[in-house]
Length: 107
Image (cartoon, rainbow, N blue to C red):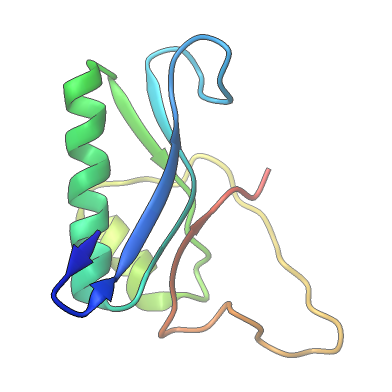
C-alpha cells in the first residue's frame, strides 16, 4: 500500500492449491503497516483480494500485545482460531508492542 510519502504497508498472501492456505482461505502469511490508518487500508485490501479470488475466509494472525491492531481485527469480526505465546530473551518487548501493526504466522 502506497501513499504520497511512499510505502506504508504490505502483505504476503497465500491462496489456492499448493499454497500454505487451507482450501477456500486467503491466508496472510506476513503483513505490516506504518500506522493505524495504513493497517485499516491493508486489511481492506486483503479482504478485497479474498473477495476477488472467491475465497470464503481471510485468515490473519495478530499478537495481542499489539493492542491496537488486535482491537481493530476484533472490531472487524475476526475471531481467535489458534492462540500462541511469544517469549523474548531477555524479557524485552521486541516488536510485540501496542503501537505496532504486524500480521504474522505464529504456527
